[in-house]
Amino acid sequence: MITKPKNTAQLGFYSTFEEQLDQQHPLYILANKINWRQFEDALAKHYSQKMGAPAKPIRLMVSLLILKQLRNLSDESVVEQWSENVFYQYFSGENFYASRPPCVATELVEFRKRIGQAGIELIFKESIRINGKDGQQDTLSADTTVQEKNITFPTDDKLYKKIIRKCQDIAEKETIELRQSYTQTVKKLSIVQRMKRRKGGNAIARKASKKIKTIAGRLTRELERKLTPQSMQKWGNDLQLFQKVLAQKKEDTGKIYSLHEPQVKCFSKGKEHKKYEFGSKASFLITQKTGVIVGAMNFSENIHDSKTLPAALQQHERLTGIKAKEVYVDRGYPGHKQIEGTQIHLPKPNKNITLTQRKKHRRRAAIEPVIGHLKHDYRMLRNFLKGSFGDAVNVMLAASAMNFKRMMNKWKENPSAFIFWLRFRMQFLLSYFDFQPKFIFIKV
Image 1 (tube, helix red, strand yellow):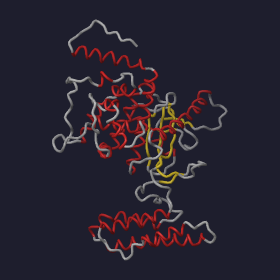
Image 2: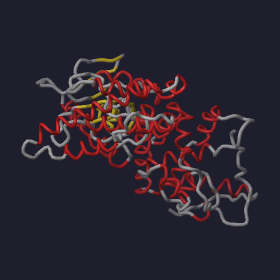
Image 3: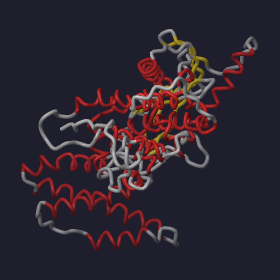
Image 4: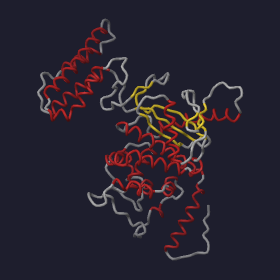
C-alpha cells in the first residue's frame, strides 16, 4: 500500500536540515533541482491504495537507487551509510536526522523489480533534464562496450563440478537417496587435475576431467528418474540446463557459460590484456560538445554494433524529444549511412573532407573516457544485478549517475549559480511568517 504524504510545512521544536546543512553542497542543490513529484505520480500505479502494509516513500527508494550508483556502493552499503550521512537523508526527503536504517537492503531489489525498466528510464530522463540545454543537442557520438557479469572465468570443468554440487543439493532438499554421492571421488579427481604440468600428468588430468563429466551426467539422469512429477515441475528447468551444458561442444553457438547467469554471452573485442569478456553489450550516445549521456541501452544478444543504432536513436528521441541529425561512430559501425533521417558518419579516407567534419570525427573519441568512468566510478565494471533485467537497469542507472555527477561538479565550481533558487526559497519562508520585505539582498 502506498504511504500517506508527509506534512512538510509542520514546524518542529528542533532546527531542520535546511537550517543546519551547507546550502552550497552539490548534493543539497541536486535534491532541490530534481522533480521528485513526477516519480511519485508515475510510480504510484505500482502500489495499492487500500490493501497491505504501508510501503516506503517513493522518493526515498528512488534517491537510494541514485545514491547507490552515484557513490559506487552496494545495496547494503548505501542503506548503512544513509543513517550516517545527513546529506543523504536530506536528499531522500527527510527534514530531521534519523538514526535508523531507511529500509532493508533487499527492498531495493524488490523496488527495482516493481518499477521495471520504464521506471528506471524515468530516472535517466530526469538526469538528462537536469543538464538543461547541454543535453538538447542533435549532434551525437555513439559507441558500444561490454558490461561484464559477476561470474568466474568459465571452463567446462568448473561447470561440471557445479552441476555435481547442485545435483547433491537437489537430492538433499527432496530427500532422495542417491546411489553414490561421489563427494570423495570428485575431491580425489580434483587433486589429480592439479598435477597436469608434471611429466606424464597431462593425459592423467584429461582422464580425470572426463570422469568428472561422466559423474555429472550420472547424477543428472538419476535425479530425472527419481524425482516425482511435482518435484520435476520445480527442478525441471535446472535439469534441462544441466543437460545442455553436458551436451555442448567447443564450436557450438549459444553456449552456457554460467549456471546462475545462463544469458551471459562471450565477446572477443581484440584487447591484448583481456581476450574474452563475458556479459552483455551496452550502447551509449553522448552529445558531442558537452558530453551528456543521452542514450544508454543494453542488448542481451551478441549483435553487431551497427544493429544497436536504431534502438539507441529511438530511445534518445523518446527521452529528449529531439531527433538526432548526425551521429559520429567508429569503424565498427559499417553498413548504415542513414537511419530514419539521421546521418551516420564513419571515419574513412576522404580528400574532400571539411575541417568541421574532421573535428567532429576527432571529438567522437571523447566517448571513450566516458565509458571508462561509467565502468570504474559508476558500477559498470562488473554487474552484480541478476539476469537480463539487471543488465538493462544497471546501464541506465550508471548513465543517470554520471549525468547527475556532471552537474554536481559544475555547482561545486560555481556555487553562486544556486543563488536564484535560494532567493526564491527565502521569499517563500518570509511569506509563510507573513513578513513582506521590499527587497531581499543575498551576498554571494
